[in-house]
Image (cartoon, rainbow, N blue to C red):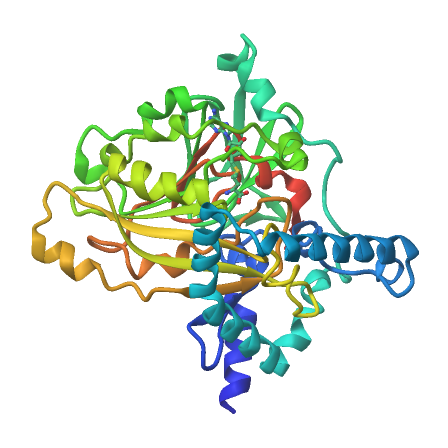
Length: 420
Ligand code: SAM
């Protein structure tokens, strides 16, 4: 049947188009796995949260019950506060009300997709049981710290490049050559058609096929600007380290004041045929105002549509109540176009046809890790195919993409992978 076909397609692609809604469900593990041949993303290390185990469900755990009652108190407090919203809160509330229906439709569509819901519960242990589990050491390298010491320019990454892409195996021994490259302030590429292993200070990393990374501080980002604009990018995804009050975030990565992002060289990174710019933002009204009134104008980006990432737990339930003011179960991806040097007005107009309020639903992975939506953006990319794509402030790599940030190898650590 048609329903079965869609599920089969989802099990391959990781993307499921939901009925009667402008929405998709995404399994990031399956989407990412299409970048790999020798390795697989480990579902249990990806899905580190929101998969309840027996001993932390609220029914059995009094600690959780008290958490819930604390939540209720907070909600009551928020209700009272609701009655006296200040102007900024009113604007945020209006934004929320505008998208609320699209989000509800998406969620209802998910709850109605019975076959998909059944697979949801198993996303975390898909195929992992038959496997030895994750293949490497516990500790991860702190790239920010490593990149800030005087020896940083001396650190080298060793790529195990396969002699030919058909993975020659001579009597069970794979043949590869070692390629050595500085790991910081240097474009490191795996141009091959399969994923490869790399080593840095006794740590192992898996690099997807046809991908590259540039690991540096923001101060060096200008090195990425291409000499010719036809070597620029057609898709630019940006997930800035916005400041916010979350103590948890402070432990996870450094944040930067908004003014630093004004100087990102978006125009210079834009391909002569133009670029689709996709910016992750939080729900803080002050930030939305900054982006709309200062950041996009400064970058020369014209807003075209807004997409939403709706977060659910493994049972399909939203991770928090939809209308909870300070804990929305969704995040926004603002989409706009950056005009290329060779574009005329007609071309710019033709670009403006991204459906607004598209929703993608997924079970979140690690703190602040965004689902891999790059592929869903490709159809809106201006210029010739294949589009040239870059992600700024990235913590992982994807086939066909350049990843820049001060820790683009973070989720490439072999502890996040299984051997195929
Ligand atoms: N999109 C990522 C993901 O899905 O995992 C999350 C990106 S996180 C919001 C922001 C990233 O910016 C962090 O990796 C952080 O270390 C990095 N960052 C913070 N300050 C930076 C700087 N001065 N230069 C380069 N990267 C920086």
